[in-house]
Length: 464
Image (cartoon, rainbow, N blue to C red):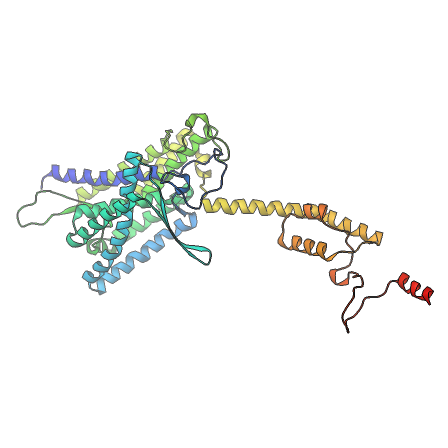
């Protein structure tokens, strides 16, 4: 094993770390919304490039970021105890089967996205929709390309389970990293810095403070890392020796870099006057995605990641010992964003930036509608009471059952009542519904009658 071969292995590891971060960050960019189509969102998108075909993402808030080290520590220590007291061959068999299923899904998406991205092909979508009691229990979208990709992924998975080939293992690792960076979204830089800081402590403690991290990494035979042989041509009778990098050292900084890229696009769109409910600015050329924009924060953070990774590999090479990569990557990425913001005078904008998911936007819209209804009801309240006072003084008001029912339903459901009161309400008495005067109607035997009017009694006496 020569030094040249070893440095080539380090370069390969670095390339495999940068590739999913770069492409996954651009894949996390949403399609822009605009008022170019006044239509409701389709329940079933028709084509694979439709705006209705956006994938659902998982938002990470500050509260979630605080819990990352806790959940990670519980999972890591649990695996350590399992490997220590149970047969590791059986454990790895179960874990390999689990990761094989995940690998088929992740590799299918990676192949399909790569082919569509290169060819720009537009394919009709098929929907598998499972509904229970009018609620969607399962919904998956796919094209013919996904079916072909799934077949290829299944063959690759079977080959991996049979041979444990390191190249196929890397394919799964890259697919996992790409999918995670695409779908996991930090909601703010504050959440991202909390996550990086917490996992910095987590990595340092479990690597330097205990044997847990190294022990699990050696015993865990699953595609949770990218590897490359230190020499491609080992001596006869010797096994391949690998240098490796955990997927956590790719995904965790990767979702932070994806946030930087989305912030760069947000800043550009703000400068050109983009608004989601209006037509696209001319600077975009009618494109909802795929347009160019300045990326100072993304490339500054990417350069910091490359530098931190180079320091990690250098220290590992010099001291011949495993290094917690986040010890160098977390401060590098955080300081890169802060330094760029300070240099550009955008510190306030960086820490004020937040991202709302589609679910958050729906909740916010519903909250605004509720406030409008409450404001309308409070503004209408005095008019309703004045109307009751006027009818009480006139003495001629009788609430009909129909109008009383309309008004009661209107008040209970909180819908807009102005139209009902202006157009449909008859004079209202100041009594409650149970005390309202009801005119005499023919009744069955034994039923109670209401009091007779005085003029009717007078007519009876005159007849006599």
